[in-house]
Amino acid sequence: MPRIPSIVGHADQIAQLQVDLAAGNVAHAYLFSGSRHLGKMTTARWFALQLLCDGVAPELHEQVSGQVERLVHPDLLVLDQLWMEGTCEDWEVIARSSNAPQQERAKNGVKTDTISIDDVRALQERLYETGTSKWRCCIIRSIERMQDPAANAFLKILEEPPLGLVFLLTTQAFPSLLPTVISRSRVLHFHRLPSRDIAELLGGMTEDDVHFILHLAQGVPGIALQLKESPDALRAQRLMHSKAQSFWRSKSLRERMQLLAPVHERGEEAQLFLMHLALTLREQMPKAPMMYSHALTDLIRGLGTNAHRQLIAQRFALQVTV
Image 1 (cartoon, rainbow, N blue to C red):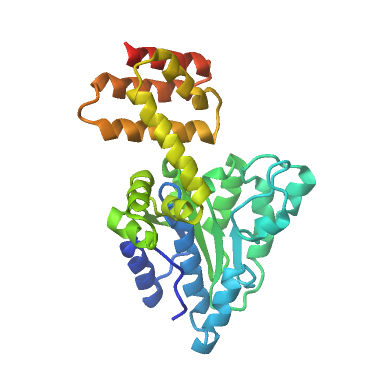
Image 2 (cartoon, helix red, strand yellow):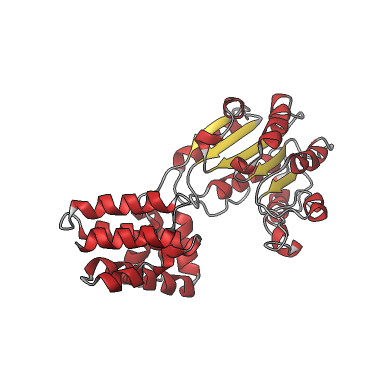
């Protein structure tokens, strides 16, 4: 068998895919559902490798594996990172995760991360090419990015897929998908992993770093790997965690309002600080007043609306300082 990319956990899902392949019961579409960074795309790439090596002489498996890794195998199409004007225009960067045609996106100056009907049509032209392997594979990450016209066009392909083509789809928003897309796919749900599984990824790190990363990852292996591979990111997370701890420990309304500055603007920094507020509050349980949890829930809900973010943050600081 071809070598297996590093997959942590998800033994049941891997076993199911292996059984399907061994029994010749491969579905024309698989849908991997779960939150971010659980390993859905890694598993999709692994299964694509198994399919593309099916029926291939063992001495050629290493060659196929290299082609899959570099996204140059003629029977593998991947739609992952998308070209976006002003955000992601470097074709070399895009080529590391996607090899599906995206020239129309550049021609039209697309600025969003949504998959349009033009993207599906460009993909469709490639799907009906003659393959060289027993199977052909098309991997699409986060299909919830499809606009309604794109989802409907894609559904038509799912209803009458090209012979030998296997779709490997991932989603972080299972409830938002068209029921007909779900019903035409074999669904595998991915879940958070126990800490012992993720700890295997953190060899060579200090005990303190391992403990902090496991606490921060909350069962998500991708987060653990990112922090292990980027000392700068780990330091930034430690700093943000420290600020969140200071927020709960402070008795000063002014200091608390200053510490809430990251949530005044929408963006990743605000989301990360809210996560650290939740984690550091959990660290204090059950000693922390129950009103803190209710106030934090109200803050998160409020920031999800179009209301004035700084005013919502100030109200939260007042609630927990009384």
